[in-house]
Length: 236
View 1 (cartoon, one colour):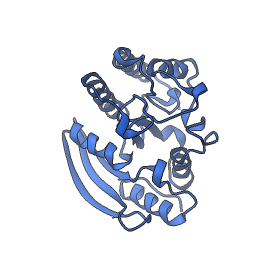
View 2: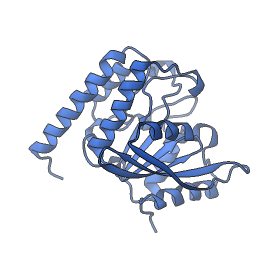
View 3: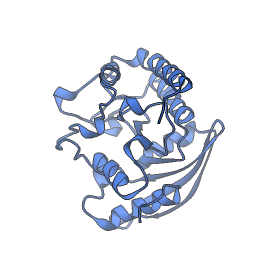
């Protein structure tokens, strides 16, 4: 696909806006967008949105600004292939989900943007300290990503991420649920959301870090069913 002058201008503006948002919080430990920066500011079919970055090996620990710089220096770098937590490279449950979506749906890597509600890292979701600056800049970051990439669907990694996005949306309402086959009480939840002029079908799954599908075909099938309900086409 040929890159036009308008595409380059849009990407330059997007990157400048992201830079403005991260500068006041750039010294905090965290990550911004996990996907390769070469694919930014082009239309996306799916946003993968977690709550916030978790633990990584000490040699891969970055500040928010350092994460931005390493992606700028290597636009093909995709953090979804690096080591997260105690897992081998690319084998964290979120990374396995990313690869499964590519394997079993219409999606290719350039169709997916992986980010988080909050860019600041914590060892546990409940330990994240959210101040007004983080809240405002990350809210503006999510809105910018939706406005720029105009995804047709969002998958929230954990229901808490979806709850925050609902508060930030102009319009949001629940749209039912289906069972996620892990015990008796876990669900995949559906939403209809509107951010500015962009309407999106969205769904949230139990957080993969605790409730990943692993090798269970029924859990993966439930996630794929949810993706298909939100306009992501499945491979036959």
